[in-house]
Image (cartoon, rainbow, N blue to C red):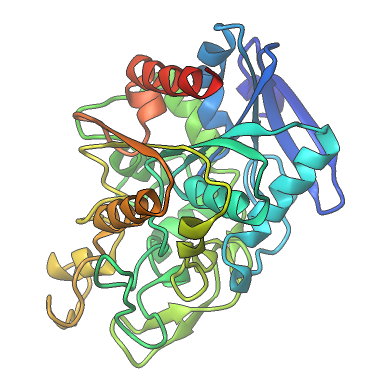
Length: 357
């Protein structure tokens, strides 16, 4: 569908860095650079309306790249053993190529983890960090408490086997635009947004098209799966998107002790069904609901307390001299910039203006 997905006022570019071919969107002619990072099973196209609203302020030059394996960026294998570093280094290559000076960095969902990783790996470049519905600093699945303690020694229940039913993965790979239970369209509407939110028809088709561009396979989404003797009998392999964000490979606590600490804004919704202490993509929750057989119970395999983990992480960051601000949006799900665009814009602009002085 190519350029028919791009809204007027948005520029769609593609460059070849020293790491990969990266596609990105750009809007705005302001002097202050702001980079937006999308999450899993998404692309830069999820940001278009938000980018246009930011551009209208006249203050910002906004960039939104597609991560490797998503959107129009190159489909290169994801080395999960590096955690989020593969994506952090890709972003650094883009920034070098475009010669972007220190900037504000906005990460949505697992894009928040990429943003944290970039701040860790390239200190001094991030003027402020905005985490919208960010993933836990311990990744997705397989941990039992606020400290990220693993449930099993092989991190079973996290990574490639988590957050993706085989039926959904097959439908995603085939480009299914249907409306039944496991279709990408249904998953988009059910999980990405609160139950009280409905996309406009044109926007739904545009976002579904972006979702269907996700590279699928053991080296991409969801990633390689290896058998485990521990419930739920699957553990993370060494390749692929979900495995990169398994706690086996992702632990971002080093951010707490950064010497140069960027101010942090954490925005999340009360009705987020993905990043939640009762996440609908967590095996602990699915087992408790009887949707995955053999669940060993709350004591053995509790739900991952994702938001409690983020709270602990940011409070500890503050105790070590960092600054963070938390904003909770009522009746909002996993995608505040689309569900509550005016409120999210107001919160973001106030935070950015505070940093700019």
